[in-house]
Length: 178
Image (tube, rainbow, N blue to C red):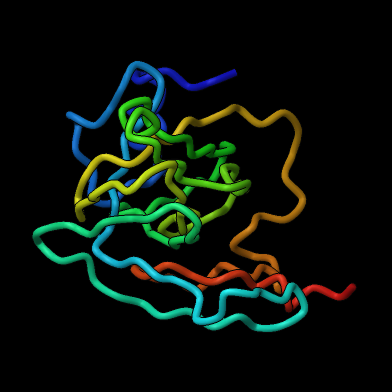
């Protein structure tokens, strides 16, 4: 079951959902709009290795915007910091973003109960497109959880994305054992 706008506000009042900064105008009927933060990153190497720590270069989006190009994976970050203590958050692109040919995540649209951070975006595009810091980029949808949570994400000792950040975070696949 997806939370309605009224229920999202109730959960914010209870402290089970935190969105900073929060703007009531960004609350949809059953979602909350998030915005592109000011930092992007690209991988230093064109060939990535799942067993290696692939390094990235961070850069700030200039005021005049930045043109994304097809064939490059850009890591972005949401302006909003979120905490979700009792629900499963899903991040999806906005239809207006999709209609510009922008995908905001390759696979990682679901957060875990206990996720407390900004969201790293895996951005790609169908054709060159200029983007801007602060533009609406996606929407968070919250689902109810059935059953008790044994271990919240923010308490897992092996959680790879727990460090609070305002910049995109590269893949930590290399920390897995395989």
